[in-house]
Image (cartoon, rainbow over all chains, first blue to last red; front, side, top):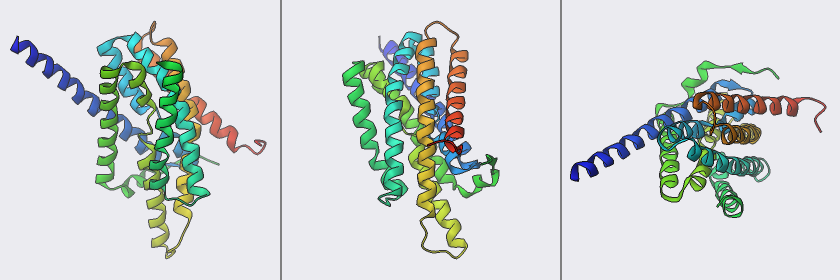
Length: 125
Length: 142
């Protein structure tokens, strides 16, 4: 029984490691693409690239099945809507209120969380 | 406005800035998986559209633009913030593409090949984002 628990823990940690590695690589790749492209408004498209989605869905579909991954993708649609409002607010905070990029983009995360969770409670739970 | 590639821009970013993005991206992906395991895929799936790239990207855009101006002898400048705001505007357009990616995967993944579905979703994101960017840039847009 101890061997079963240990091997279960080992599989779990291996899965986490691969999630970390693939997620990190996906985000880094799209971020680097954004760095090398101009104009800035075009490069900004890559700030909303499906990096975390690609990494997670590929791993989730393999480990938990495609129906499970489909449910995650459905939630992703809702939080992508929250992302749109988040990005608009960040831009407005920087341009109109002259906030720094760090302050605006981090503060606006509150809006992303609030909208995503509200949509989850209202439509997805 | 023409889209251009500037590979030398990769040198502007320090190694630790790449490391931060890697660590942040990896952490968010792990978190999404853990939340899904603990609370279910509908809650964990929200984090698939978490702004993992944008905050660090916008901050770096502002920083590099300010450094560029400083090297040119211009101390006080709004250019950094303006460049970051443009980056945010692009991200807003890209998020519509991200929504399309989610829609495609949600509908197609249960019954189709995984790799093809993810490739189709990525293409949907690319096409919708670029089309929106092009339309938004055209003179007739109100």
